[in-house]
Image 1: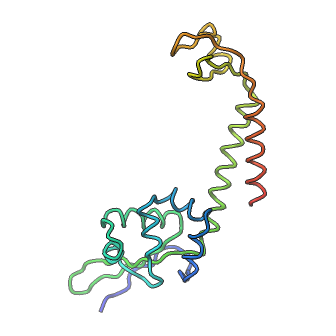
Image 2: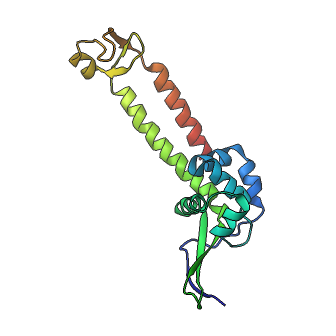
Image 3: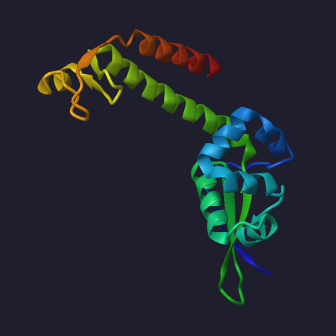
Length: 184
């Protein structure tokens, strides 16, 4: 019989059958795919409701043990999985028993949305506070100081640089920020 020696520092959760419903939602699925990739998504889909070892997950999914462990630790870092360690009294080996924390998925998605909003705010500020020039061949876009230093000639192809109106970029960023803010 194994001794329980530690619980991961996560709130208790009930990884229930709701998981399959959640990961069928395209937003949750896209978030999980971005976080853990295709193999990781397969791991999430195959995780049983009860505690399981990483070896068992590797066995039922056919995915390599290192990939399973990397995925479970990524999920743990984002508070979407928790583990409990048990020590075998005879061998002294530690066994990690994993469960998913489906109840934290909304919180993780909200956190990602807030990060994206912050990045969009930075980009919006950059777009509004700079004047841009672009290569007529489409090589690159430069702020005024860079264009001026290069005598309004593209350093990549030698073509001229022309003033670029970035109003559409600003409008697009503002629209996306509005949509994300509404989602919160």
